[in-house]
Image (cartoon, rainbow, N blue to C red; front, side, top):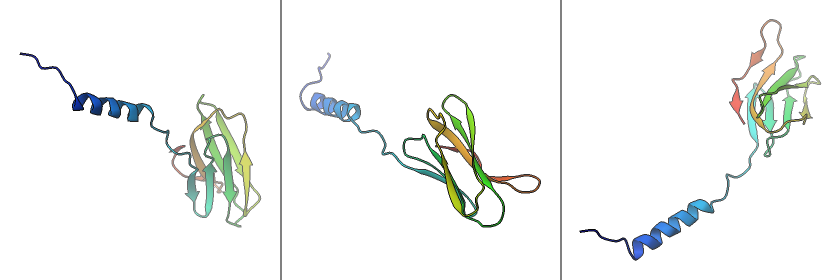
Amino acid sequence: MRRAITGTPIVAMTMAALIVATAEPAAAHYTYVYQGNDFMSINSSHTTATVCDRENDGHAVYGDVIDEFGRRFRVYDTYNSSCTSNEPNFARIMDFRLCEELSGTDACTSWRFA
């Protein structure tokens, strides 16, 4: 003998489906990565990369960015204790890392998802 689902279970399933279908997207946020006191940020719309050299040590910093089409860009900040923003033709920044130029091998953070 088969039973039909009626009443309260149908209302509950319908309400659950409506909640999922109308849920708001995740809140926009800035994403940061640090290398010592230097940092890099990606804005909430994932279209601008900002690199800040906050160490007056003579070592420039740069950020590598990969956009959603796999294009790679580099943002430099060589002015010691300042910040540089760059908004080239980024479609949407997907991955990024921050590096400090050193003699020999540069010190870089691991790649991070934006």
